[in-house]
Length: 231
Image 1 (tube, rainbow, N blue to C red):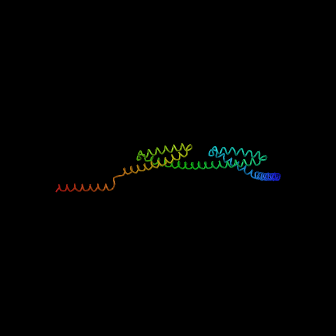
Image 2 (cartoon, rainbow, N blue to C red):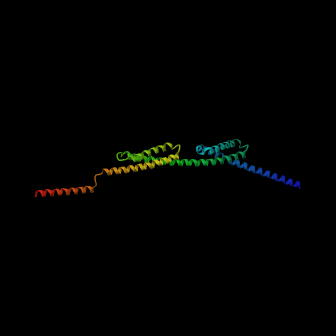
Image 3 (cartoon, rainbow, N blue to C red):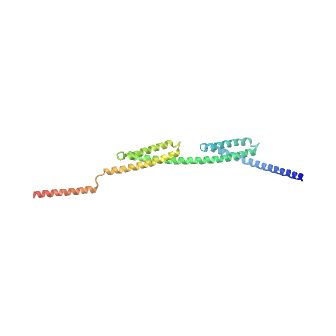
């Protein structure tokens, strides 16, 4: 009985080994068929990664180094170790894909922030220019409040422009403050001009008419008094 069981165990081991050989042959065939496309894919991803270095950070740098090592091994050692080099490159490709996805997301956010910043700077610059032009051409009518607001808006705009590269989020906020203050400066200046124009207008028609009527009454009374004296 023991001999029979031993023989059965040997047969199972032999069958398992033959299956493993068959599977290995199939896996090697798959590796041979897929390796060229995989190498091309990883090579393209490495090219993309080079343009995302600043956005990918350490995670991308590590994935790039591993992918380069696996790619070099695939080129030099594939014939001697097709499964090992193929598996290593598949794993490296998966890690590189993940790192690239994160880098793309960071780059997209950076681009979005740059667009928002540029819009804020353009808007603030337009508002500051409009307020400056209005106040500059009406110096005699505009009071200190509008001028002070304009000066502060110009200072904020300059600050936003200086920090745009180093701190785009803060620069965006500062640019928006500059635009809002420029709006307030323009409103104050417009109010000053309206007040000044009103102060330069002649007396209203109602006041002039009343004066004429009163003047006429006085003249009539004076004439009557002279007539009485002559009588």
